[in-house]
Amino acid sequence: MTADFNPAMANKGPSYGLSREVQSKIDKKYDQDLEERLTEWIIAQCGAGVGQPEAGKTGWQNWLKDGCVLCELINSLSSGNKPIRKIQSSGMAFKQMEQISQFLNAAEKYGITKTDMFQTVDLWEGKDLAAVQRTLMALGSLAVTRDDGTYRGDPNWFHKKSVENRREFSEDQLNEGKCVIGLQMGTNKGASQAGMTGYGRPRQILNNNP
Image (cartoon, rainbow, N blue to C red; front, side):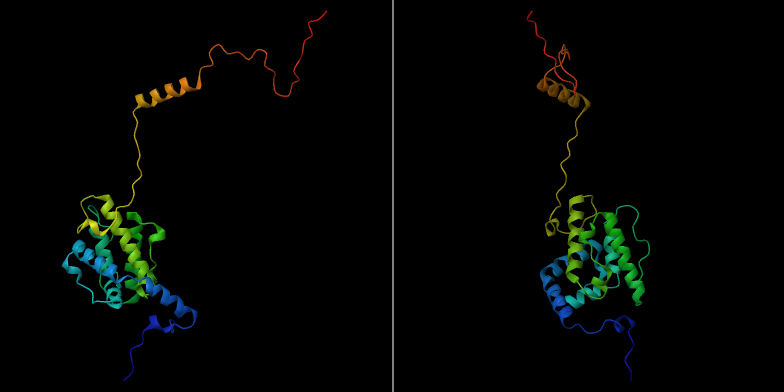
């Protein structure tokens, strides 16, 4: 009996040498406690229909790997038109990766910065699941900060992002400010340029002695 051929694994090869060391460091960044918190939020946000992952890193990856749960998550944060219209479970690799990409595009439009965004292979191949956690933490923080009624769950699960403190001034306040600046700078009424020399011209000295 021959094993089924998996084209996704064909070019992956074993991790050894420097690549294994790098992967080990990445794996250490993965936070088990964060996994539990994010799982709790996603289920609260999307509902029980998204299921629940098996405990552990691999179980969490498999839960998110086809992109369906992620797409449901970003859709649940939209009160109007859903950013992803069609969410379909598929066993085909390219379909799964396509849905992950759709989530990433929607998350960027939602306001997640590129520096907080994971790459499709980080999740699908399990290259950097810590980066996936970072993206979802940023998404949760932004949802709590927006406070637009779409967030579900405990708001204390995420830190609110700092919001720019912009002050609006009326036209009268702006004009009043200009007057104050004018008084501080003094006035030039009655001032004259008489007696001043132009740039580059020598100063003339008049001798009044006979």
